[in-house]
Image (cartoon, rainbow, N blue to C red; front, side, top):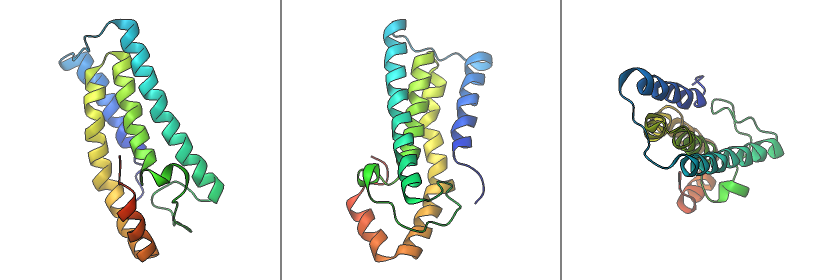
Length: 148
């Protein structure tokens, strides 16, 4: 695999912009300051998840690209709560962005982006980690959820 999963989220965010502009507006009907504030807070929490996960990669000297070899299993920090904090974070970021912009398409396409990444990256990553780390990875998967 050599396709960066964040491009799936970017592509569907851009699709949401296009759908909103040229096909059928899906405007979110919340009072503007409240919607923008809530959306920004949601997007910021998603970004925080991504940065926290990235920090654990840096601490261990690993590269976050899913097609690069993993020298060790990450099970500390945010990885104690979710096995895929970067994908969860990007999904939450896209959702918050859609809400902040009042673009329901961007928000609605966030779960679809995660579903695509699930099959494009997560499942192959899980197979690789299971093969490489064996029982240690299986123990980890039995105690930490894939997403939330």
